[in-house]
Image (cartoon, rainbow, N blue to C red; front, side, top):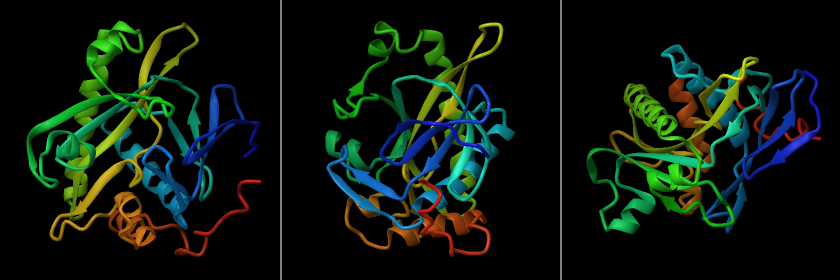
Length: 255
């Protein structure tokens, strides 16, 4: 599939102009970062695995009526997505205390929360993605009150579905980050869709029995076996790459 000019390169993905107007090719890198890009490294095969995992989860969510930017996977490291206007707000859905919540509030990591808690962060690498309130979002015009209601409802539905899906394969969905974007049709009508990716890069996933971490916290905390943890998530989902793991190095796709 013809790839156009590079539009953007982030910490984990590269975006290229797609073959048709309104489309983008999203390339998944093996680069890994943590603590607002302070810690950097490489997780061999992460891009391949995240491409497959995100494809699988986005497809499952579309089957239950969640609109997304995903169109199709092109190859081991690339997928075709719709071009969206990204809303500069990250939605964090938390089921179990971990990470920054535990540090901020002094809640021991692993504490089951009385209910799912949704937090919002302003999407800004320069500012370190600061925690914000709904009032910031609506006051500064990042999203309207109705948009925010729709985003909250979709996020909670995503949480319910993914929590059940992961529980079925012996994994706890501790917390995760979502991003949304706006799509405009030929009549100028706008709708909000789920964007970015859903993978062990932006989900905390713990083994149900052992609480072993199966996500990017293994990289953040120098726990080792990072690639193996991502592979285990893909294995349990039944979506390890075709032909096994021989393409996990795959550097020649991005030239």
